[in-house]
Length: 124
Image (tube, rainbow, N blue to C red; front, side):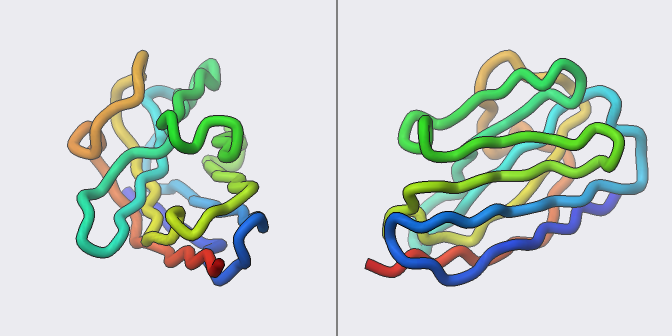
């Protein structure tokens, strides 16, 4: 299983970025995908998750209304649209996948496969 994340960069506060993650190596018709982030000195946290089938979405409270997770089922790609970015959103962002669907936002340990991180830096 391979997960390839892209789209990070430097943006000013209030700006937007869209992260992409391409999944390959197995069938992703079931289970879920998510985006996590880790800021320096902090634990890795889950910011959003989506079920491959059905598209149910879940968000951490502090990104609700600003971040949108989506997936292109046919392309095995998951996106994270990040709007109204804040300096506290600065972190390395990771995409991840799990074999089972989610009904609540999972913890960071709730994923089976991980991609490499992509840096997001929001300047004030």
